[in-house]
Length: 111
Image (cartoon, rainbow, N blue to C red):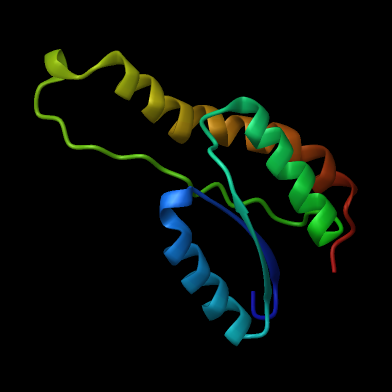
C-alpha cells in the first residue's frame, strides 16, 4: 500500500535492516514506526500490539513475517532449545500477535 503507515518489529541485531526498510517506505510516502523487540517472549507480543495501536491510531492489517531458520542435517544433534526457539518465533508469536491484534482489527475503521 503506497503511503501506508506501518509498524515493524525487529531484533536488535537487525537494526541496520530495519532502518533501511524504514527509509525505503518513507521515500515512497509512508511512515514507519520501529519497535525493537524479541517476539519469542509472549508478553513482548502483547506489548508490541499495544505500542503499534498507540502509534498508528488502530490496526487495519497484521502481517506476520518474523521467522527463525537454521540448517541442521541431523535431528539427533538438534538442541531442544533451538527447537523451542524456532517454534516460539515461527508459530507461537504468530498466534499471539493475531490474538492480541484481532480486537483492534475488528474495531478499527478502514481508511
